[in-house]
Amino acid sequence: MRRGQLWRVLVLGRVERTVLIVGHDAVTESRVDILCVQVQDTAGKESLLAVRMTGAISGFARAVTVAPIPKSSFVEQLGVLDTATMDQVDTALRATLDL
Image (cartoon, rainbow, N blue to C red; front, side, top):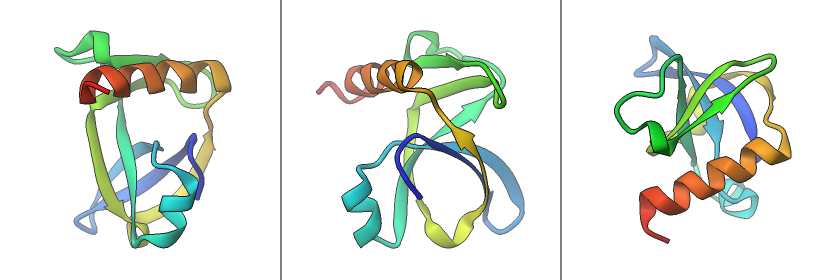
C-alpha cells in the first residue's frame, strides 16, 4: 500500500468506499492505519478542495475528508493516480490543513 494508490475499502465492515492513499509511505509501513481521502462522484460544497480525477477511476478526491483507515479495511487496489493529479491533491491537502 503506497501513496497515490486508489483502493476499495470496507468501512465498518460493510460500506464500500473508494479512497486515495495520501500518507507518507514510511509512516504507512509503521502504522496499523493509513491516511486517506475519500473519492466521491461529486465535488461537494468544498469544490476548491476537491481534485477531479479521470481515467480508470473518475470522481473527486476530497481533501477535506482526510482520515486514517485501518489496513484491515482495504479490499482491492483499483489503480494509481498520475503524478500531475497527485500534485493537485497535495495542493488541496496543504490548503485544507493550512500547511
